[in-house]
Image (cartoon, rainbow, N blue to C red):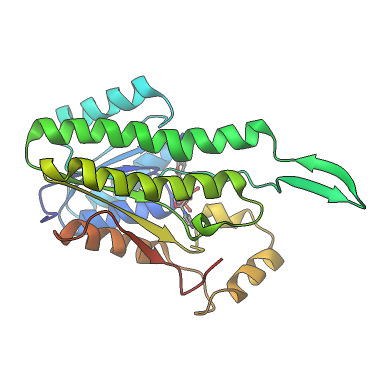
Length: 253
Ligand SMILES: NC(=O)c1ccc[n+]([C@@H]2O[C@H](COP(=O)([O-])OP(=O)(O)OC[C@H]3O[C@@H](n4cnc5c(N)ncnc54)[C@H](O)[C@@H]3O)[C@@H](O)[C@H]2O)c1
């Protein structure tokens, strides 16, 4: 698909990888629709995209809220004329071991709240946005592309029962959508970033971050722009569908 003139919807577009995705597609002439929780973050993303000479709009919407997602997708079509690409990027972590055990005594567990919060945003949010974007793409009748942002953690990262389940899930959902939606000219794929420099990692203590970096064969964290270039590849390559691209400096969990 040629990106120029197409509408690209990016969830979690207010910050981090989402903002770099917006800028990468803006640089290719795409019209940008960024969805996020925070208006100020969206305003900054929109300003940076407009500076690249394209139309860009921000939409405050929580991806877990079905009516908000429907309203946001309708607003995108009304404002920008179409939904051609969706990137399901919004995501959170709430890490905990399944069980914390000290001297044979259970001292803690991953709580249901920790489990549910991550499932709601990282999995249900992807389902809702994917479904609503696909509906509009089918109605438009000119195909489309859906990309889910997975993670290297999908292989099973200790301390991330909840996150790993969602990130394996969104890669699997892209496989399903590739098969179900091909007949409408819609492709789907996923990208599994390794540790990438954004706020999601900024919360970690420096010694933990050093330990993480040491696990990466390339001995550095990824740049958000390096994840964005994989998304551009998926959209531009019309023979790509169903698969997951790992962009992780060569690390395996
Ligand atoms: N940074 C990494 O190392 C890394 C590695 C692998 C995968 N990822 C994935 O990449 C994606 C982006 O991560 P990031 O590092 O840019 O994170 P980030 O925290 O910098 O940005 C995430 C964005 O999603 C938004 N968001 C959160 N909940 C939302 C909701 N309910 N509705 C709408 N928007 C919501 C946040 O407001 C934020 O702007 C996530 O799915 C994350 O799991 C990140």
